[in-house]
Image 1: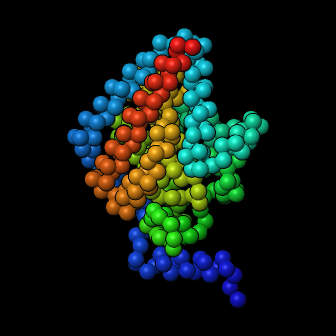
Image 2: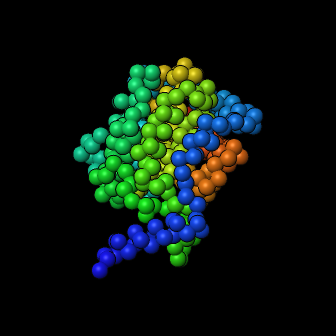
Image 3: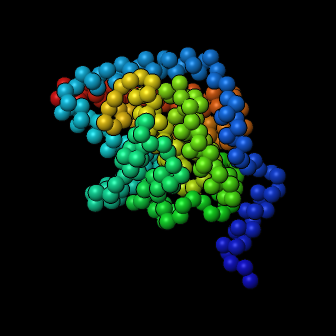
Length: 300
């Protein structure tokens, strides 16, 4: 007699092989390698960068004590925001963090300082593990990554099982992580301070290499890469990032899922453009929000 778990695995394998549902594959990396960034996206990046640099200048106007306090405060808020976006219990998470557990963001910022270090396989896995500790999905932190083919992304709505697409086959995850780090560390698209971080975010979210926490990891890597490219391209140097974006996705959860599904199922120049522009809009929203809070902070 087969167990319920075995029956579930068999059912999902049958659905995977049925041809009724798309399966995201490593081919998505080829679309990144061949991607032509549209003139519209290049222009949009310049528009957003102008606002971003004004915000950075505003931070530099603070004295050293206030600047350090501000940067520490927004980092702490981001650690909470990225979990609340995934509907985690902020009260319980706060209790967990009181034990001075090292956050995933702190871990990644320590090991990932441009140009001294490059992102490694081990750092991807460890930062994801730390992201899940203290959350409702902490049981998945015991594994390096998903070890079955049960993973899928569902369509919006309630009711019966609604599969949008199946995640990357677990047999390909090791290669997927290696491909991700190769792209992250490469010079490809490095001239675009905001475009490349959005692409990294999209790759992690679309591939679904982990049982849970994929978009959390994607947002964190987006934030860290913006930090690195802010130093490399814009020559602004801060001890920790001056910008985080999780809060700006709160009101756009459905669009977030939709745009990720589009690049997972049909990773074309057009769908990547839409994904990038969606994230540009969220970045722009967050710049307005943080700049407003910064002005309030300066007056205190």
